[in-house]
Amino acid sequence: MRERLALTDGRAEALLRELRADPSIHEAVAISTCNRTELYLVVGDPVQAESAVLGVLARQAGTRPTELVGSIYSLRNCEVARHLYRVTAGLESMIVGEAEVQGQVSRAYELALGQRATGPLTNRLFRAALATGKRVRSETGLSAGRTSVASVAVDLAREAVGPLERRRALVIGAGETSEATARALHDHGVATIFVANRRRERARALAERFGGQVASFDALPSELEQVDIVVASTGSPHTILHAEELALVMQARGGRPLLLVDIAVPRDIDPAAGELPGLRLYDIDDLQARVARNRSVRTGEAVRAEAIVDEELRSFAAWLGSLEVLPTVAALREHGDAIAEQVLAENAGRWENLSERDLERVRAVARATVNRLLHEPTVRLKGMGADRRHARMQLLRELFGLEQAPAPEQRPGEPGEVHPLPLPRARRGG
Image 1 (tube, helix red, strand yellow):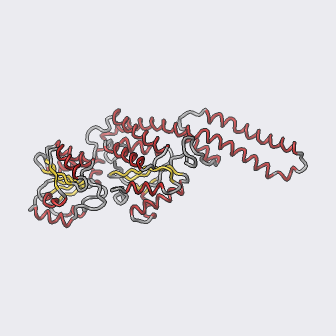
Image 2: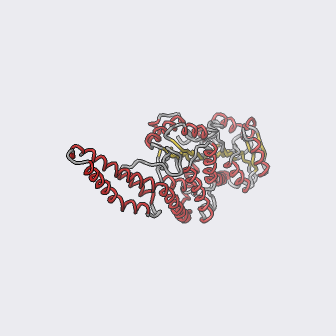
Image 3: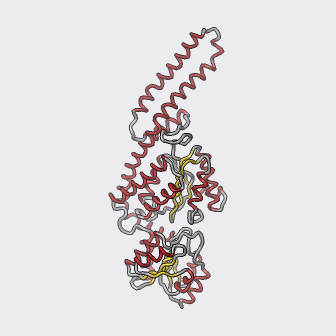
């Protein structure tokens, strides 16, 4: 399911356009990394929006919405900000503290900006999240050491084939993860060959940087016969290396073992290849298992990072709450006046003998009662501190059944709350 929902090859742009075409969705940002697909949305009607997005995700995955229900999660309001801050800081990553996720979140936000899919709330949310991620990396040691998928992949290779000096590696793909993998391989004395299809010039630049070579996809079978390690990390939506092809490669190798590390989502290498004699295949789930065994070493730094997230979250909550004070006060008074008018109308038949002057006095008493009842809550709302202001505003609106008023800096008709959509519940990853 995680692979079927990965946003590769322009699918993110298409998804954003489809989301923004729905009248219940006002702002949207889509994040898709090696181990997560998440949508951050500002919506009008949350129930309608979640239903619409469930349909969009189902079409993306080529499945029925009912099959997705058990694999999604939905957060709202400040819990959205907390989750995104943790993602950007690396606290939600498969490898806690990994550095790549900061750039991935940044590029997802830039893509949404380019698609004109963002707005006041998502702009503030993502800029704050990126600032939080930078703080965590500069003020804690969370990112020290082996903190990337690529570095752990190289560690697996070293354990599988022994010392990496004078080994030959084939890197399929020319993206950021491929670059990080090539750097880690180069640091261990590995001679690297790059293969890329549409990004051949990028592959050539990487080869020059790390003293490697470039090969074409047509030459892939012959290159596979010569190398010791293969690392696949492309954005292809389809399998690149099939078990049948790799079986022929293993025959041509004459019994020499071959290690394959597939860190792409969707997978680049047919999982059935792992059953071939002499071939060892690791995928993203194997890396996750490896990381889980060593996660405890970062516990102390993670606690410090969580404190930074909490501090930044309070700032965001204060900003979000400040947008809601005046609309909430106005809605509360409007609600009280409406109740008074309703009670007066319901009892109009009982006062047929009253003069118009006396009726106006009754109305004045009713309005004065409402004003006096709401005076203290109004004063307290306006003087409320930043601490949990947004949560308290939300509780007050729920208690009094107040409708959400638009925030001051939004366009008419836009909502004042952040409501992310249901997301695929993948294993934790970048």
